[in-house]
Image 1 (tube, rainbow, N blue to C red):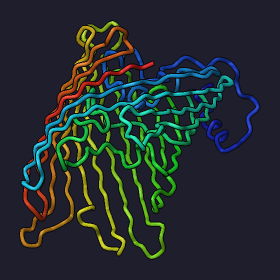
Image 2: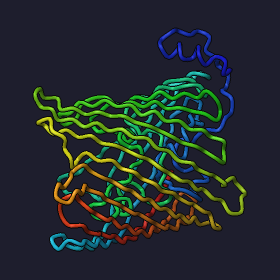
Image 3: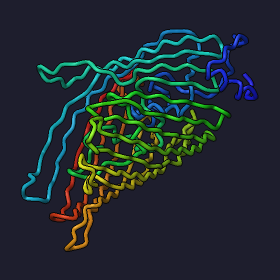
Image 4: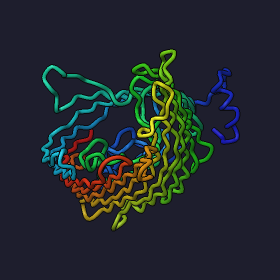
Length: 407
């Protein structure tokens, strides 16, 4: 369909009936795989990264009526040594083995230009605890829209990623958590992740082949708090060079009358990424630089400012993925600075916390391209200078082996 019909398409979204829906096969355009097993991702990149890093916001390449099954299985085995400066906080050596099996089911109905698509990701965890066995979900969403023009997404999902950490630092891994008590990397993620208890909706617009937008929202109630939020994001994609930016605002309030407890979060950030990884390139490379700033205002149940919980966070980082023969080498570094408002009147100090996280990784296929082994070595250091209490430095050393099979 011609881009000139873009405005007409928006009217369709509001409910205007359209009887002239075209039935020809949609035009061929760059688009994402339905899973995370893109050929380039088998060689480079973080194979379990946010789907939007691999897809860069593009709509699906599977544009016929069908039912697809895909997923992955990974097992992490790791070791961490955590060094803590305070005598009351003991040093720790931690052994880890955990993993999960994920089954993705993706039905699609397409009339040519219009489509309806859904996806559900079912998780079975390797490291179950007796009496707490459960199967849960990652994605569970529905999309309706028109190919290459727009779509509306409802359900449970992740927004478009704009801060990518590379071929390590997978979420909630040893190296992602870093040193004890260090502030988390801010990734424009107050309203980015899959939500627990809250509803999500997002409008995606594709005005040109190289420019695309997402306007994501969060709405609902969880654990006694009402929440509303919005997270617009944009991607300017020239193939080898991609600029990704996002901003967000979110508010949570206690649902009980008389309780003044609330949290307001806002932030912005982005990345500039380069992809020299076309098939046939002798030395394929992906690299990028990231930056994001977030601000949290926290009010306690009595209407007073929670000075320790009200923080501002600046994160800066970069990643490099490089293919060498059949292996992939990944490097990454992130520097996070966080401050609170808890002022010590005697010293004039307020809390200031710095967290440095670095990693190096090597990944190689095992027998078949869909199976890989990856070793991640990581170091983290956090300099903690609270307004009250002792300054201290905590460190973390870790190594992790991930065995992954995608299908």
